[in-house]
Length: 191
Ligand code: CUA
Image (cartoon, rainbow, N blue to C red; front, side, top):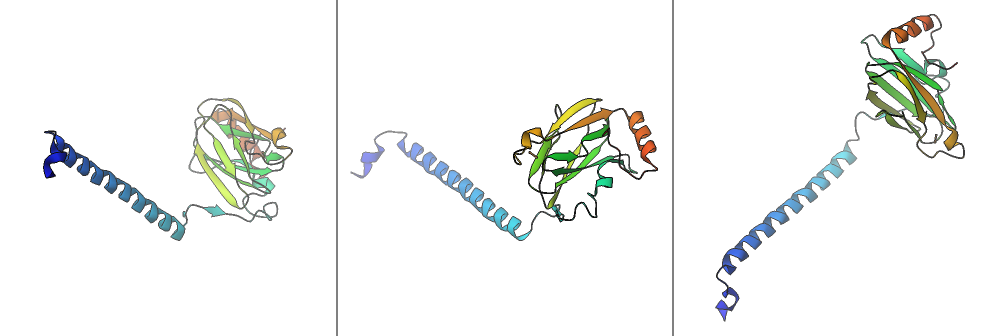
């Protein structure tokens, strides 16, 4: 009776291969579960260090996102920082101007509810969350005009929440920066 399960000549080999693979699959599953458990505990104990928080109730009074500091500013290292504030139902500034072929650093937040935006025909896409500062680095190669719709439903005026992005050549941008020098305001293309 003992030999009845080994009627086929390859049965032993097949049984060994099957149990070997069962152990391998079991080990992979165990590894993945262990990794999930480790990562959950790790992130719970150590929130991401790059998370930046900000008080949404005082944005208009003081700090980085006061109105005069919104828009584009040329940094000493040759990059351009673009600061954007989202509100029901508009972005400030309404028209963002940036130089082409230059490292851009977008920094944004929201004053009331969650908003977001994407810049048409580019890979710029951000969420703006009250209480947090969002960061995104990008580079827009060509000059031209883009639309920048809010892409996160934020209330009844959501569909009308738009801004524009104008990519100008470096010389034109440098001229705008120079022209704004005495006002202390950031550069934008708001008329
Ligand atoms: Cu702001 Cu949708």
